[in-house]
Image (cartoon, rainbow, N blue to C red; front, side, top):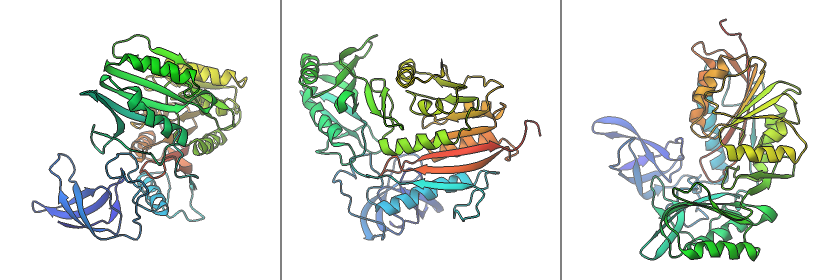
Length: 434
């Protein structure tokens, strides 16, 4: 069928419209751009209608030749077939379209100078060789180990010669993984990130049998100064094998080192992360009683602790919380660190500001608790526009006017992908029950 691509949908697919079984339906078409006319083949997979491009008949002016030859097979950089300017334009429009439908926020996507909500956009530089953390899949069978990225909407692994968005250090470490695991059977996940001295660290979770050379190879790489460390978890083990120093190390917003648990979460783009954290801290009034949810290893906690001594930071993962303690202590900062599930935490009556950076699934339960609390400001970070819009809607409640957006910042944390980091600052406009 011939399809005209009219827009981009959330997730990076082009969006077309066609008649299917006598009904007009929206169709998702990966690797297309608004303005493309394509010859496509309808997919039989369940869910929303999808189509595969057979041939591009008329190319959009936004389309470019992707610099990566694996872009169609790899599930990572789903917008690399668009110019950088087009990527930014479409990502930003998708976020603002989601948010402007929430009653009471007073957002205008055109962002005129007199708009009630201030919108700022922060673009990344560089847009290649920026990614300092990679997660890879691995499978060993019939005497060969494959290590690669997941294919789109699949568990299949794609092997690549180079990853254009990974830092050179991490990409070189990635190339060693298959030979390191040679002879192993089973499957697992590999996380690579910088460690002490800028050397790569390796975090391996494995289900199956690891070849004896895996452990000795890790020891040799650490002894030779090629790796900072490795942590290896076998399925069912209560403790990992630890070689060298497997903790992750990145730069915090203040330019000093930020340590994370082995294999733990860290933002993908170090420079953009620093801008995000600084903006979060600026959004918290000095001295305000502040609660931070999903604090992780303390990436934002260290900035918030410099704004107020009345800070409580909550995290459910003990290893991340231990890293947060180290990062605060290294700077002579203090905060009350609490291990708890943010969804179940009762928000104390003295809290005036809530800062949260939940995972991609969002924080619906926490937002319901915030809405019922006495907090006057919410500083919310999100990597998913859909769950962000849902959670702000939960804050607003049925009346739709409980909170007003003071500012919205969009951060290009993941160039060449459809993902974007959003910061929304909200102030309460009405008391509970009014």
